[in-house]
Amino acid sequence: MNILNIDEPKKALANVMVGEGVRIFNFVNAYGCSIDDNSKIGAFVEIQKGASIGKNCKISSHSFICEGVHIEDNCFIGHGVMFTNDLFPKATNADGSPQTEEDWTLLETYVKKGASIGSNATILCGISIGENALVGAGSVVTKDVPPNTVVAGNPARIIKKIS
Image (cartoon, rainbow, N blue to C red; front, side, top):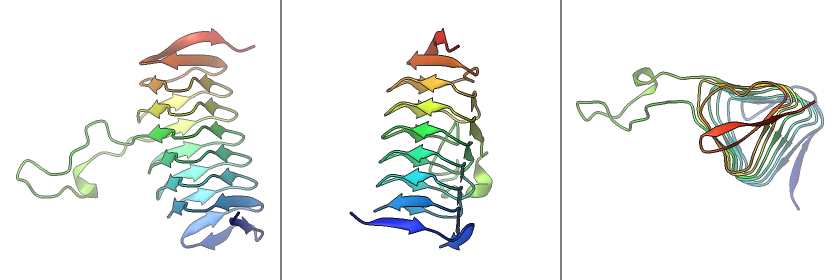
């Protein structure tokens, strides 16, 4: 098993800021982002520029953390979780020219401390998932998730509160 162990704190690795004790498995595509201390990034994960991963997080394989996603400390991201950052994505402008960064609006998403997101969930942009919240596997999250709640479904709805 090939694992990249980063032991130098806050070391820039191919323009990625990597904290102490971070473990990155094979086939990860990360650029222009930050991954804080003791977090673990599974195989086949993409983390785009401007994204941030806090301390002690686990990002499971095949997940997509796009630009504008901010994951705070102690969060769990299950296998195949997909984040978005544009509510109206298009490849081209009305005149047929390819879109550039100037042609769309980035909407940031925040996953607060201690939150967990189950496998294959889709998280639409511009929302916040509250502290210690749990998103059920396969859910489609379209609006803010309050702290200490469990949400599930499509669209995700509050199932119960966590004490």
